[in-house]
Structure formats: structure tokens, C-alpha cells
Length: 485
Image (cartoon, rainbow, N blue to C red):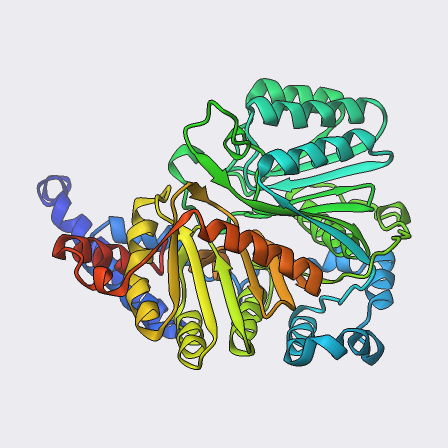
């Protein structure tokens, strides 16, 4: 028997592989997921023995229905309940913004119905263009902190800017402040020495969903892609800028990094705080006591910007961020300007953009000319033809790498956050966006978009159609993988 196994080991492994593959295919069918994604998994499982099973194991598990973690512990806290009650959705709230929101008021209602995300009215915000501006503000606010500091980032690197930020955290913890740090285990690179320094200084820090061999798991599913900071419960940061030197655009960097972040003072910081505490409850063994000092009253002079904070991920019942973006597109009346570093959209977004453009809406999209992902670059290109044909204007940023994740519609609605315009952000990763209902701030984001257009090359439809067959082949290959990347 042993000799038979040795002689036929590869045949037996192939048989086992296809038994498991058939089981996986049946499971995929029963889930009734997107047909394109279903077909992609079937092709991978059938035509790529062993590798197909690995891909399905890493990327094929659906956790939106089988939640990775529950937020009930934090959300059931009486203080948090009172905060949510304070911002309960009311006709009075909507009336204050309905006079200029028009159809955009649907976005407010949609997000509240999907995830109980309140509309906050007393806020002051600042759009931060690029990393040097963001870190100047962030370091200043961290040094002025008086009670607590909460940071949650996809990438924290132990480089120059990373050490500056982490050193301030250590100093503040040693001074008696409560400092908590969440970093994604795949995205971040923090040395053992720095982790020891954080611990010895009193900084509480935890990785999000640790994995083995993180260098080889860059696309591991269910990563915490959020980039937020909360200082004293009064100041919040959210956007696309991680903590790493490449975001600084110093003279010795290889390429310019174009990104957008935002600084918030006001009621919306309470929503950021609740999301942070929910994640902290998941990553730590600590049953954190929630104090009123986490949610201080903030008196904002001239603060009247209406905001909603939207989180999305396997812990939410709905794809909140994608649904609001989709609704913003289909309710647009004048223009839609989108900037995203990774454009691998689902069918709903593609169709919505096509219909908007064909109905006379000025639809423009900025993506990188040079991407940091070969597969994403060619997968993105494969979607451009359908958009260009419908009249969408596509631009490729050529000054460096555009990493900003922004959208502005009709001078009324805009968003800054962590979510890319791709399947992974919409359905898999943990993301967080700020939705802004304000003309002044939306016009600032529009201004930045138009400035970025000046550093971009317009994609010509005829030139696109005449690209080489080899380019088309690469695009088709990468698009095949697009539901999985």
C-alpha cells in the first residue's frame, strides 16, 4: 500500500485537489455571488491545480455574512448609546441641509438606514493636500494632546517620518497620556526594537489580524485599510495618507506622491472614535472601559460643515461606501470628478458612470499613469474603453503617483477617505470615508482635481482602440483576475 502511494503520489494529489476544487465550486455556486467573480473562481480552481485552491482559500471566503467580529460590546456601552442617541436621525437635521442638498439628501438617508451613521452638523474641516502638509498638522496636534491619542493605520513604517510619529507617541505615553495604536500586520513594517520602545513607554499597540510571512501576503484578504487618528476626542484625521516616508515628497524621493487627507474638529470626531474603539475591542484582549472623556463636548466657532463618517468592511451588513458613491453618481445633475489610484470597479459603478456620461453629465476620472501594481494597471485599462465610448473623460496622472481617493459631485457633495474605486475596497477590506455636504469644501476638492488634471494626460478613445494586441492580451489576462485582486 505504501509503495502504491509513493508510485502514484502525484495522481493521488491531483485527485484530492479536484475533489476539493469541486466542493469549492459547489460552494461558490450556492453563494450566488457576482457571475463574473463566480466564473473567475471556477476557472482558477479548474485550470490551476493547487494554486487555485490556495487562491480560493485566501480570497474566496465571504465574511460579510459570517462576520469576522462583532461591534456589540462597544456599541452596547451606555455612553456610546447616548452618543448615538444624541445624533439620532431627525427631520430637523435634514431640514438644515435640505435647502441646498436637493437630491443629495438621499445620500444622508441611505447611510443612516444602512449603518446608523449620523449626520453631524457642527464641524470644521481642512482638506490637506499631500503628506508634508498632513504630517505638519498631525505632529503638531499629537504634541499638544492632553488626554489620549488613538491611531489606526494600514501602513506604519519604521522610517524617518514613522520614527517621528512613534517617538511622539512614546513621549506622550511617558507623560501619562493614554496612547493606543492599531497597525495592519501586512501593510506595516515596525522593527522589534521600536515595538519594544513603544511597550516600555506605555504605548498600547496591536497588529490587526496578524499573519505569518507578511512579506508574501500583500493581497491577503480582510486587511484594515483605514488611516485615522483621534486626539483627545476633539480632533480627527482621515484620508489616504499612511505613515511612511514615500508620502512626504522630499527631494531625495524617486517620485512625487499626490495624496489627500483631512483634519476634522467637531461632532464627526465622535463617529471616528466609535469606529476606533470597535476595532480596538477586536484586536486587543482588553475590555476597554469607555469614558465620557473619549467624547468631549467641542465648541466649534464657525463650524457648520455637515459630515457623515462611513465605515465599510466584512463587519458591516452593507457595502456602505460603495452604495453612497453609486447613489451620488446616479443622482448627479452637473458633474462627477473622481480620483482613485486603483480603478477596478464592479458592474454597478461602470453602468452608473456610463449612464451619467451618456445623459450629459460631465464625468471625469483621474488614475495613475504609472501604477505600483502591474496587474491593477492593466486591469484598470481594460475598463476604460466602455467609459470612453460613453463619453467619460479619463486622465492619467503623469507627475508621479496619484494615491488620493476623492470624489466631488455638483459642488455640493464630496468624499475623502481610504476607499479605492475597486472591488477590494468595496467588499473586502476595512475602509472608512468622510462624506461632506458642503459647497465651500467641495469646491476646494474640485479645485485640487482641476489642478491634478493639468499634470495628467487625457486618454484618447481612438488611440485606446488602436493599442497593440499584446496590450489587449495583458489587459484581458489581468481583468480575469480583477474580481480577486
